Image (cartoon, rainbow, N blue to C red; front, side, top):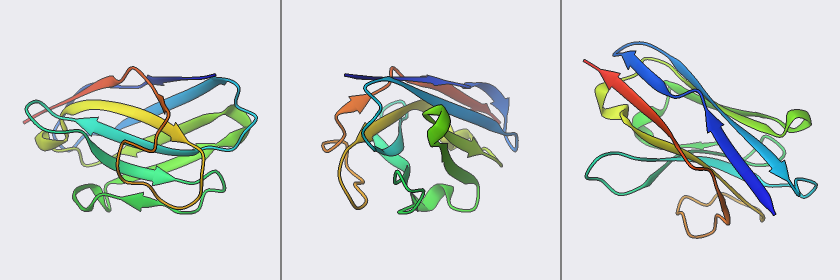
Length: 124
């Protein structure tokens, strides 16, 4: 069993930055691809970024390209999402998710492990 725990959310003004962290614990010996999803009020959950165990297969949704950076430190079992130039439309609950398998998965279905989420609120 794997547990994921997000941290780093909060309230920030537009144009500001936040760094989210996702720490994995439990049976982490297997390699996982990781992703960040978000769910904004009244909207469906969407993928924000993806990264493979190797650090390859990096993917970003178009709306965050050039502003967000996903990275990971496998020695610390932690994945990060650096969010810069934040906009009010980035306001959402952000979730990290993990799955086994190759390639890039942009839908929630393939992800077996999920954190509880962390709230990000961007004020205008």
